[in-house]
Length: 419
Image (cartoon, rainbow, N blue to C red):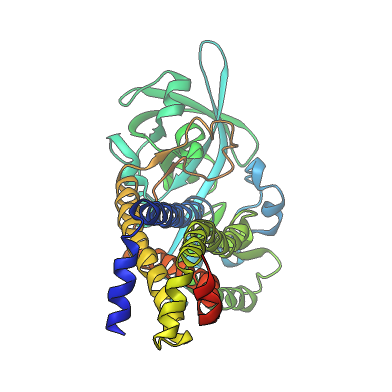
């Protein structure tokens, strides 16, 4: 076998330019696979994580009637606990469910601020700051000031929203909103923090205030509009969700409240999971396209070396040996090209994994209801690089079977007659 490797390696240097072109084609395709796979995984993971953190949690509990009008943020269909005993007691009971680590209440409502020219509409999020920091990436987006503190009339807003109302950190702002009694109320808050994020909802629409203050101002003591249940892994949702529904049923609240897994609250996420499977087929197709260059090269080599093949057969080299010889040549090209491509792809992916790809201008027209971060960070991983490398080697080597079998089937007498 070793002598076949030596012959195959020497044969590659007969036409260096041709070999180089084949290697470059494979390297480029494998590099694209490494980067594309890292980008797609990063995109899907980002969309999934943002949706879970700022919309649904791993499991979301809301009033059934609220679910039908969620976009309007109504306050007359709250989550007020079991038998109206308060959301805190309900959260405590739900936290006792196995593998539930956090139960996060949020109180969302519509609001507006008047500027010199217009009324700016926005959404208020009454939250527990400690829980939000522990669960979400909110602190990473806080570029100025600090997070809100319970018991204080203060808010945190995104840069886009601050620009709309012409305010900055340290200023006061009077926000007008409807209470749970459907009456208008205006309250002055101090702006204590500024968020900078690619998520349009957080940057331009939502503002955060302490949950206890939101409950007091809206006349919704012990109430929230939603409860988010958090586990250590989103894969546990299928195990936890039946237990949550069981607790609601045991408390006689299954007709008033509905518990939804994070995938049920998004029209996009189920398609994202399907996209992973589809793109795996696309990666194979990309490498297969590049391998056509190698296959073409090997066919030309077989044609040029017909008499040489006949001579080797006449000297006793079996068809199996000839097959192995050409497979080894293709395998060497595939290995070198795949290795170079995997390394380059890994370097490029690692760079963008740190800097991110900013699609803010392309996503400017997206609705704030779509929780989507316009800055995508591809995922750089050893597993991704190894996958692309072996994919390149395998596809190229398998592709070389066509010219290799053609060479192996040549009869010595016919091959030697070739001019």
